[in-house]
Image (cartoon, rainbow, N blue to C red; front, side, top):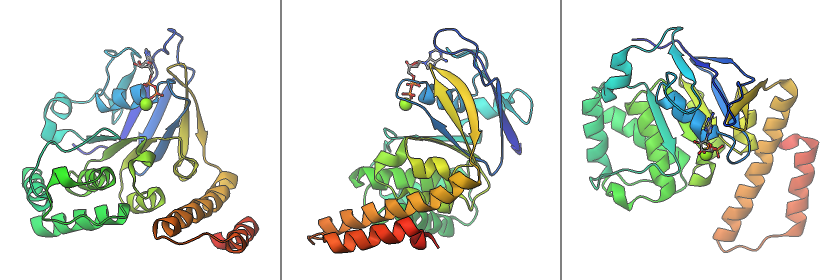
Length: 270
Ligand SMILES: Nc1ncnc2c1ncn2[C@@H]1O[C@H](COP(=O)(O)OP(=O)(O)O)[C@@H](O)[C@H]1O
Ligand SMILES: [Mg+2]
């Protein structure tokens, strides 16, 4: 079945209050962020989506696919499940070498032309992580960042999942802006639970959570989009400083200030 859109029908917050945002429609290509303080219900919301909740979770939300309750095959057959959920705690329960694992997954998923798919997955993953993944290394040897990068690449390229949920991956050691840039090339629904301004402002819109309920949806307007590019430049600066320290260099105040001046004038973003 081809998924064109999914809908979240609001239920109730933690105190039993009706959710202020009663309905949310997501269509292919949309990038959504879910924001809110710790404990506000962000993870519960994406779990509801991942489970195709149908008035059977504490929130009593319901998820529709193409304006109707999802057909059973979608929810019952893992091979047909259109949703990939990646969290900070997701890991591989396999000590196969990376290439064997990807080949097997590609075969199960019947992904076209197996070897190019494996290569594309690895290339994608290696753009997300600073430390290149070696095809022959075993899955259990991968670092946290490499694991997350490979999971995302695997879900996008081999799994070809139309809906990808990412719960707080900013702390998982992957390049966030690179990830967003790459993901944008695929026609999918991406939902990020995030505290990160770059990810949030590069999303089309965001849902604000409060007390377990969807409080409001905010569309990223022109002003925030302009700021997004400049915040990305700040991110870049921090990344650069981190790399220099790692490489054993010493930081210089004059270079730092020159960088800041460029950033404030907006030159770095043009
Ligand atoms: N709508 C809801 N109804 C009932 N319990 C909820 C609801 N939303 C969240 N919870 C519960 O509140 C707690 C915190 O929610 P969680 O989703 O983990 O927050 P966050 O991810 O924003 O830190 C969890 O125990 C969760 O099960
Ligand atoms: Mg959470």
